Length: 231
Image (cartoon, rainbow, N blue to C red; front, side, top):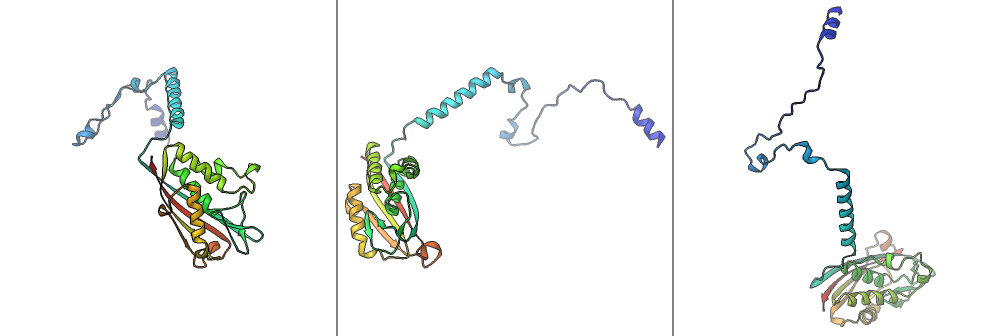
């Protein structure tokens, strides 16, 4: 044990770090990989002032891209989805039509799941924020507001951007009540709000086969896809 200790202590330790650098290379026949060569470290060092300048330029470019108008395309596609809880004591309004039922949508506005869905689809196609950001439920002025107000604003934004409705396909999902007796009235009002011909507005309805909250008559949902065409 003493000998081992003595040998360890007497082992010389380099007084200076090894300064020689070994070039970095890939032993590969691939010409792309062979093109990688070691670069002196000075090329990787950026002064603090240069780094700050680069950061400001990057931030400016990001800011500019956020405020740049959406690219003008020949057509745009948007998808909307909405779901509301059904509770007693509320009216059930679908597509601006009051549907007789023992419960309705609990919501900040009138809870029209179809119109909310259509508005989101149009806003999405235009690359704009969703309905909850433009008409927040924390704003008391939208308390109990008819969803036709939201539709009018979405249509105005659509025309302002230079687009018109190509076609719309919507699907309502609810267990009860049956939508078929009210389907044409809903579609006619939807066409009126959109300023669109009935031939480009389609409405479907289906149950949820008694599965989860939709199938148990505790909620109602809707999906909408819109195609916007450049004027």
